Length: 118
Image 1 (cartoon, rainbow, N blue to C red):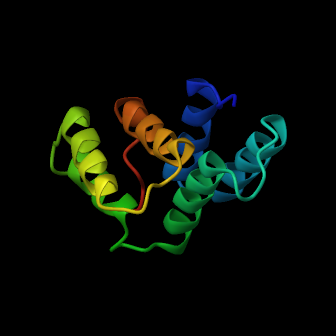
Image 2: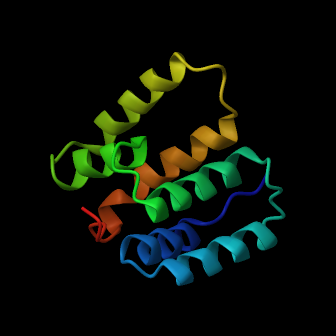
């Protein structure tokens, strides 16, 4: 399965975290179409979930905790990856595509703007 490039993801997260929510939604739709993601594909489910949680302002979500740890707490990307992997070890075998989407987000954190909702 082909995943979106880092630049495409950077554009999506950059729009999302800058508060350009309709632009982020448009990019997400283009990603789904370009990469032929179905609604049930793990990678797309993760991207859509991240978008939805940010849009709905769920401050107790894993996404917001991750963003606060990195942008406000100064936690390293390596530490965030380690804690994600530890969390996933206790879950019921999430799809590897789903995990890859989250790892891609963590990889991009240092090139993204500080989320406007923090």
